[in-house]
Image (tube, rainbow, N blue to C red; front, side, top):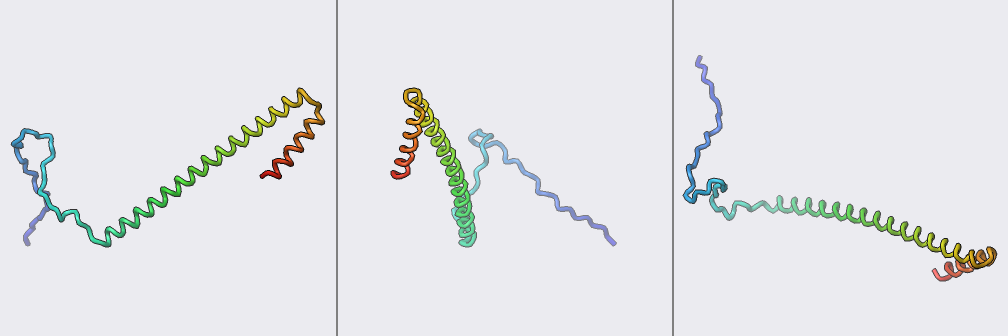
Length: 116
C-alpha cells in the first residue's frame, strides 16, 4: 500500500516585477474582453424585475413619508388657525359684550358651513 498524499495548494503568486512606467501603485491592467460583460436574457430579466420591485418599495416609502409630513403640516395649520381665531375673539370680547361675541361666533360658524 502506498500512502500518497495529494494536496491542492493554491498556485503561488508570481510577482510581475516593476512596471515600465514606474507607477507601482496602479492596479495592473487586464486584457480587453468586449464580450466578457454580456449576460443571459433570463438574468437581465430577473434583474429588471428586482430593480422594478426595489423602485416600487422606495416609492411606497417616499409616499408614506410625504403623507406623514402632510399630516403634520395640516395639524400645524389647523392649530395656528384655531389660535388666531381664539385671539381674535378675545380681542373682540375686550371691546364688546360677551353675548354679542357669542352671537358673532355662531353667525361665523354658520357662514363657514354654508361656504364650505
